[in-house]
Image (cartoon, rainbow, N blue to C red; front, side):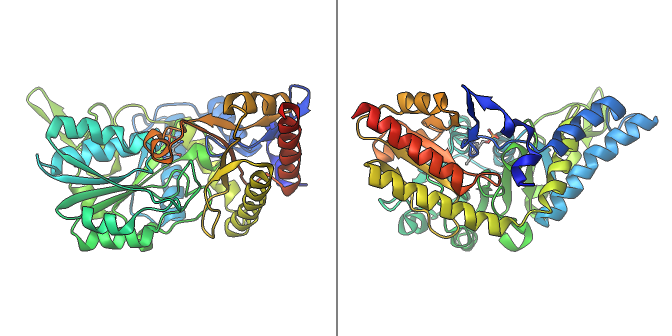
Length: 397
Ligand code: PMP
């Protein structure tokens, strides 16, 4: 048995070839246990949560809250707000914390490496509130300019930074980013969407104020994610969405709110998704993540070296701690054409700007081809990938 056998989709064919799925930075595949848990929930326990006394409602509530317990214990966090994903988690910080705590003229520090989901909410808030946004530049070695970061922290109230780049795979110096932000009196939000699939982060030790991530990048379902929040920051947050489930009482003259995470989870939540995510956590708890991370990084490094030998430009460095993401361009073959030829041979890769246009502008390009590896990928698949790349390049030569 290999890990791959746990994932039904990985035994399918695409265009007459066995699927080799290398688009894991976009979303990972789901093991059968996750699919079964969701199906079992809808077949047996479907009901709304927190509302009724009947048995099904109890099972649904237990399924939903069990996911929160998994998140809290996996990440050692006191507060875990369930969201629809990283994007909603970051928007929750912008609207729930930012609106309540930022004044005109206040400064937020972002970086040129951010995903659009960690830029656009701040731009919207900045227009609404007259907040200044500063961007930390990316250097030629694909790392953040830490000198510029130190300078940008003057009068900053909040830093929002990506832990691991979805384009480059580069892991930023997060410990240093966090401690410098705190020394400057700023809170810090970490976009950990690409970090949590590879690294079991202890949120208490990590010491960031907010951390956002999505289930679907760590073998869980789409449509669910979480925001971890330190207790003092949690107390400073105001609801972003109003509705059922988040209130304590409502009268025609006003409402009072729940004091726990439910305050930020208005409406019917993502119940089936939460059940599926719990199954993913359970499945992942039998996996040696650090060993796989090292194995996958070696595969990515080997792939990057081969691509350079073929004449491609690789955007990334594949050093210890980085994610197994290989972004590259061929000097003459257009990336979309390249990806279509790869698809014709059964390979799934991503092309385009990867929702990180400021980073691509900085790199002077409009897109890359991105191959990203996860737990079920093997060196053998990387070798097949490279021989197919060689075949495609040979056809165009
Ligand atoms: N940040 C990063 C670094 C990401 O890679 C992604 C997903 N591509 C997101 C944020 C947004 O995640 P989601 O679409 O699941 O909300």
